[in-house]
Length: 377
Image 1 (cartoon, rainbow, N blue to C red):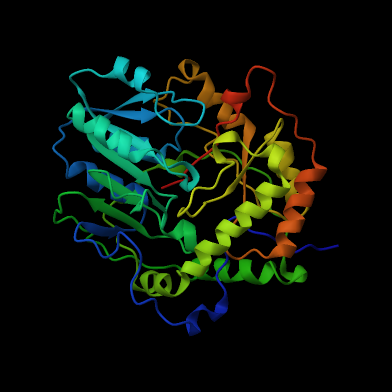
Image 2 (tube, one colour):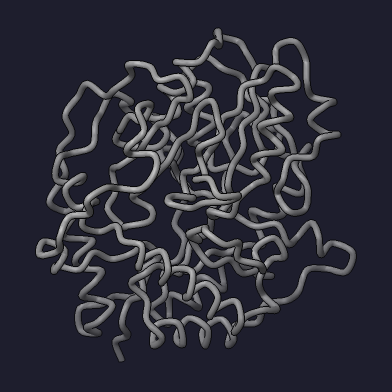
């Protein structure tokens, strides 16, 4: 029996071409320091190169990361000095103080899965130590916290709006002190990209067109390679973005997250139980004793889940960061996007309920409960 396919990223309905364009896109698009690139990692590379940094300067970077951000920093001539973070994935001030040397010039802060860090605190912390703040809002667009948009506090902030709308190849950079940084190579949106996104919409509604999502494949270091940082998004991508974004989409994501949280409460990692006002959740996290097996079981039910950040950047000394290593093995991200209705949510919850997911070992609840975050920039 064929099942409908529930994709991890939001599918794009063919009717998008008939929608009205949004009069104005949310922050940061209207800001004078905003520049657009093909990918978030390209935005980061340009952003740090615009800061008063020199080759060899060091950046405090979380050990729990995708790898693309670390590679972008490295390609810009910077060195990542890693920190473990607390059980709720926030930087530990005591740990950071021990890492600060005259060569440390910046703190890299990630809003994991779109859930906000206490960015006001870390802005003050950086100012008191004369450090720059790099704010990774790649999975947080278009979220708000403390009455301000996420990404509005950093000296540099990066965004990946495509993760919220399902159309790849749009990254944004916001620099606190506007600079004349922009892409110089025109991009081309491959027809296959749109066909895949539209096909996902059809597969979610038509079982005969759907296929079983594959289990996790082998890791490919190209997942975090910088690529060509001078590429700009296509005009078609920006045209579609104005038709794919809507406040109703954010409200639907929040409603979907809360519905799954209430149904699967015992399986949600502690940092993500409470959904702060104003944020747009990027995914729904669950803990798994055997993550690959759970993902394969979900695939059998037609659900595409993602094993986030399974492989850190090669520059990370893995043995020195056991908590980050455990997070990579025990967490799985499920779809929560605006294209899901109650029927799809019931399928997701039922598939998770049917799979054995052991709780974290006694004494390790705090460590195991911290989960994945912003995906590839």
